[in-house]
Length: 253
Image (cartoon, rainbow, N blue to C red):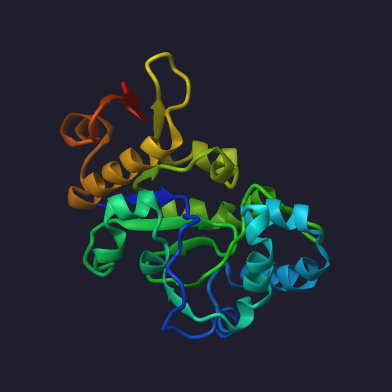
């Protein structure tokens, strides 16, 4: 069986601190395909953030006005920030319901990657600092981060997804990192979370369901769209339907 690829968003909720090396050291020695882009992004954050006014930083970091000073300090401190593996850093609703903090990345049988405004695309073992940065935001020196990463992730997403099923569980703001031509060449299964009338489902309920579906794929990596819809437990109030390349989760509560 070919190991499937699951693409997840990051979470605003993150574990604090860490016992891994400082992120600046990690980035400086990153010789992977995204290393240069990660260093450029980190440098841009260091150059831009101190000069941003509070309303702009609120949008960049995705925090409320009361948290803007903490977010600025966190971003400026990224070079010295300790790291944790991605599956232990992200502690949001999706990741908690998927049980990612408890999995052994070496034996899980699924290649889970987090689309991150800071790292681009992070595997579960990737060292990640605590940070606040939105992929839908803009940095003055780079422009929109989603578009900036799109060109830099095209080759990596093509390579990572080649020859296997790709589960796309990204919300709209993170889906903008896809190059449409790359996506069209891969075996991608999308998951939609809607109300019975077709409108987007409640965000909090969607995150719970998304985590539960991820857990189902982790437990049974050979599932296809029909198999996921038939066997997964999406949680109370949800029903699942499937086409070849689309799973539709409908929230009835």
